[in-house]
Length: 247
Image 1 (cartoon, rainbow, N blue to C red):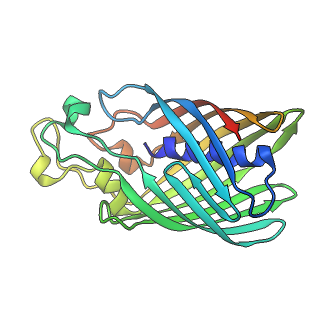
Image 2: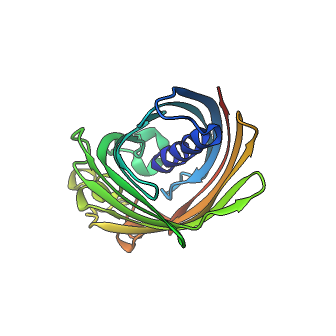
């Protein structure tokens, strides 16, 4: 799902930090993460899945599992990059009785731009992605702010974020088409939505080759998603525990 891919990218970003690679030096990391999450759909409880973590970094290019980026402008405190990723949202009819008779909602490939700004009072992030696979035909824009706290063998980063999803995107994953409406599942059109997230990331380094990551987060749904007949929760949570070995 989408939060899993974000967590995976987060893991792999820090695996390269642990090794402190030189410019244009090829780096490779391998590991995995256990992710427990609840996406908020009716009759779909929390689930735990194992996500492999495979990373390749060469110069300004990073391939982080299903997430890729190329940094084309960088200073000491600012980075600007092009990104591409698989959005692993969606569901199939067999996932829950509430989806019976509905069309499957598929994952998409999203392309976009992101910027990171490092200041004396925290890290700011701006990201924009657009579906280029003709799946949901929507876009998402995210603003984030985190405060890195250095500790002896790693760092802890409390953060907040706000993500704006276009109507096309939000309606694709949480709406109900007229052809899918039943007596127990009414037609529902989702408007654009702004979800808010709060969480903490932590990264613990042991030598140049080992990193353990532990994260927890909660995302509060916009009211237009909460009111969907497919949803019975006010938000989603995620807990992640991962390990990466950097060769």
